[in-house]
Image 1 (cartoon, helix red, strand yellow):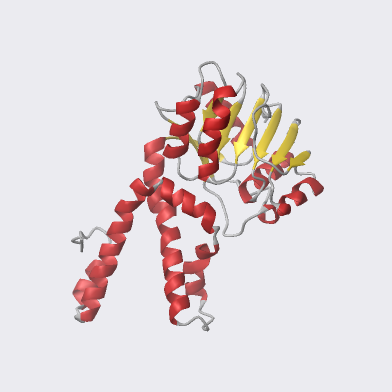
Image 2 (cartoon, rainbow, N blue to C red):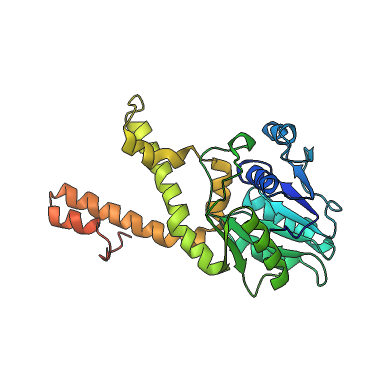
Length: 285
């Protein structure tokens, strides 16, 4: 499968960006791969041949040329900031995509600053990752057989042809491209991805505060594995998707409060109901 770009510029050569570079190499991409990342761990990407060039800086005006694909693989706030800095000057033929798991904020920013006849933005989000970070955690097979969301919205200044080119590229990486509306994406990941991340941190904090010396069992390890994730990156994601996350988070808090009250009353029926699906729980406030 031929990748329809002459050069790929990866901004942030960490877990996701580094996996992009490795997967491009595995797919036989014939063009150049340029990495932009100040993290010292990213040097391994150049040493391994995953990228042809590595520069310790961010994306700047003039870096992108017609025929380029830019992959923004850093925090959500960086993608938003780059919209104001880069979008107004992008030449025609350039396509920019990101990998963040909160799409409305990023897509709206790029739509706001894009100019008619210039480069195009396509929101992206691979449903792949790890609680590890940096290029040493990157893998060529990270995207194999996973859904890779590409967003569509009337507010986004993209073109169907640009999205098709990105779709062809992520398919070559081994992923399954799935086109989804921006709002639907953010609502879904709030429940399936963002809420579990919050729960893992909260549980980890409770356990560490209560008995930090205990090693814990496999179940606790499964529940708190996500707590090792990059806090700075996730703080950006959660803040960007706060509107969609508040609803399911409130429902979880209500269920836990109901379970707590049932336990206090030794009421097994209420306890079961509080933790059962399809049971409406009255809000505690």
